[in-house]
Structures are given as C-alpha cells and as structure tokens.
Length: 462
Image 1: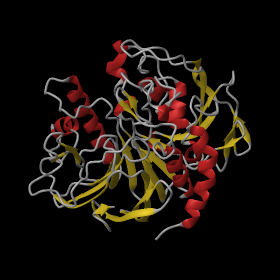
Image 2: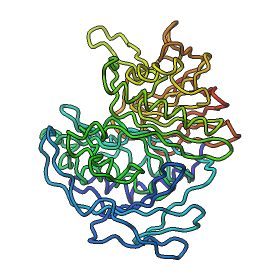
Image 3: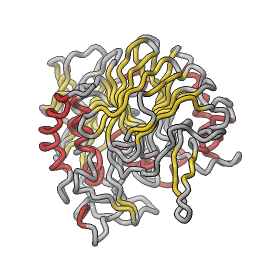
Image 4: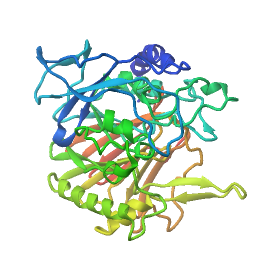
C-alpha cells in the first residue's frame, strides 16, 4: 500500500527546506528548536540560537526560564584534528518539559510533545554528507545527498517519536577543488558543518516529533564528539565530558545506557558504542572493560520491562558486504567485533533475553535479520543520507555463515543503494508493523515483528 498524500506533502517541504539546505556556503537559519528524550523518558526542549540570551520556554501558556547549556561560543580546536575555517558561535539553551504538558513553544516555534505510549515511530541513521579524504559526496545535489527529502517524507508520516541510530556529522574535510558537486560546503567540526549536515536538512522532522538519539562513531571524541555533547546528548553538559581535551577522553568517549518507556510493558534501551572497534578489543584493552560494564548496566535496565528494544549505532547481529577489488568476490562480514568481544564476556547471547529487537545503523543500507537461535531481531537503518554501500547482500546467507557466533539466521531482508527511512507501527504489546520507505515516501517493503521474530514481504528490495 502506498500513501500519495505523503509524496504531496514532501514536495512542498523539500522545495522549502531541501533546496536551501544544499546551497553552497549556506548552512541554514541560525535558530534550531527541538525536543530530546532522555533517561526515563524525560523530555528536554533545546534551542540553538544566535541570540545573546536564552528566551523563555512557554509550557501550557506559562513562561518557564531556559537555562544556558553551553554559553555563546564556537567549538574550540582540538589537538590532533585537521585545521578548518572558523565557525559561527552559537548559544545553546534548554529546559525540561514537565510530563503531562499539552503545549510548548520557544522563540515562536511550536515544539512536539512526547507520547506516553508512542505507536508510530520513524527510524533513520547515517544522515550526513560524506567529505573525508578522497571520499566526497555531492552535498549540493539533493539527488546525491537527499537527507532533506528523506526527513520531509518521514515528517509527513506524522510520527509520535523519531529514533536516530547515529552518525549525524560527515563533513570533516574540504570539498576537493575539482568537484563542483560539493563546492563551498562548510567542513570541520564546528556549527556550520553540523548545521549543513544535520540541523538544517532535518528541520521538518525535528518539528514533527521528539527524538531519541544514539551516538555513532562519527561522534567519537576524535571526530565530532564536541558537537554531540553540546547539542544532542540528553544529559547535562559537563566540563571534562565534552571531548575538548584529549586528556579527558576516558570520560568523554563513554556514557551510561538509559531507558525510554514505550508503554504496555515495553521500553527502549539506548546505549553508546561510539568508541568500539570492528577489529575487536583485546582482553587488556580498556575499551573492552568499558563496554563490559555497559552491558551490565544494559542488563539491569532490561529487568525493568518484559519487552525491550535496543538502540545503538553498531549492529551486533547484521551483515555487511565488501567486494574484492581483484577478484570481484563478495565477502560478508558480521556484527561489530568489539561489542561481541565485550558483551560476550558477560553473556554468550550478547543481549538480555528480554530484548525483542535491536535498532542500529553504521552499515549504509537497510537490513533485517531474524533468528532461529533465539536472538532478537536486528534492523539496520543506516540509509538516510550519506553515500550508500552498494555491494549487495544475499537473499539467504551461505550455509554456516552467521553475523555472530551462535546466531542462526532464519529470515533476512535487505535494500542496497537506496535512500530512505524505516517506520514502526505498534500492533500489540510485543508486535510491530515495520515498513521501509524511499526518499519520496513510497513504500518499498514491509515486515511483521512478533516478540523476537520478524519476517518481511521481500527478501531483497530492487
């Protein structure tokens, strides 16, 4: 089934937002207002502004002072990062929105309010425009960097909640002088690059619903971690946990998992995997100990609800594929080895038994895997803006091939080299209808999830 009204709404929104988001040297309007969902479902209104002072937040017609999260400033240079042009100084403001509020607005912008039991959820990930070394995406071309269109299509779905599975910032290096498609793009780790990559193209979706935000490896301290802590993490902003000084990275690279209630005995558990390594983590590596400790906290949170959905950046239970440059042979690789090492030190199944689903990104495609071995369904939604992976996945994995030791694939589905977003509509306490949409709001696949099992209409989207 398709929804023509989504495409009609998207056309106007993409013209209004998508076009301006891709103009060279124009990272977008200064003020951005949005709602971040954090621990225990607490909703925080955020405002990034060029104004000198934080305006009040209006909640149910009453003025509530906003506090300064980060004073007016630009992101300071960090040792070891390549030089970049100066970026705009911005003020970041925030205030909690009390539970049960019926309306909220700031600086003339209406804010979306959280639902106690969200039934319509959008899942996106890996949304920025890649400018890194020799890899240069045409950021000025809405066909090649379509995140504004994806966001507008997702907003037209009218979600109750948006989940981003990480990697927001990709414009790390200057556009090559020979590539007109990204000429004039801001780059580096300051606000201008963040605005061009995320805040401006996401504007329609930021206005549509509150967001749950997972941290990706692009938001590690050595990359865009300073922006992550300033603008996206739901916790209070703390000096020393801001990725500014490499000496503090042992704190800035990690954060505790937290739970977001979904009602009817279900919750999201969001966990930070920004500093893992696909190569694996040796027994003496401090990262392995950090993620082992994180697993124990995830397990404790999971005991709060009978049904849990994990949200992180790195998939544990999915495939990716590469092609050998000489032979053309396609080689499958499995879940993040660093997490499998660390979580496996505590639990040979890698995730608590009450996990029904894991939502991740990192691999630039859409994918579903369901298991005969009792592992939770894995969805990968890393196909919303950045340059796509183009090596196809098989409809069925080769005999004996698994994304993680002990995980026996029962059903698998994928969409390669297509931009879009995923939605989840709740149909029962532990059941969901998952749909896959392209950038223009056309349905491309659908899946039914019951408990830990899932099955999709198509094994491969063409």
